[in-house]
Image 1 (cartoon, rainbow, N blue to C red):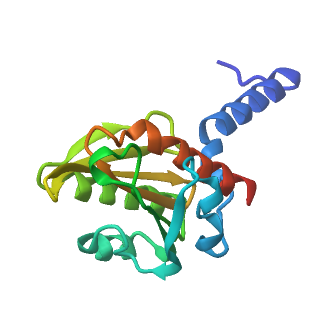
Image 2 (cartoon, rainbow, N blue to C red; image 1 turned 180 degrees about the horizontal axis):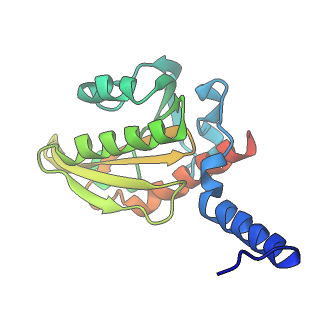
Length: 202
């Protein structure tokens, strides 16, 4: 069959170019940089007004969320990370919502590296004894949550860990509170707020 020339050929090339951009546009996403501390959700952005800062923002290493995953995350291109802890002084036995919140952001050298790191962390958290994996719905460029139950002073408690990615950033939010008083639905809006802040800084 004869190769088309002229306008028909030009239109074919244009269509191919448009298709290529549509299929591969996500690979050209701008990397996010700077100090990871600047991406952390602040105390005045928390949904409950009575949180205090338990530990101010500090730099942390590749094992910030799971020490056993540090080596894998370094191979994934981990560069640096920051973490902050918030605390709410309430009676555990009758509490609703989170009592502690530990929030972190880790910067990776590339989007594929960050994606691999998020997978590594999800796998490690899911492997913990008694862990239950939960869906987070649409969160950043992909996320997952894990819960682990326990007991504190005779009160059933739960820890909810949410890990999600936004481009080359890997975020984590760990909440602790009373079983039945703390729900994943209370945590996800905080993750969404942090993600929105990250996109505003691009």
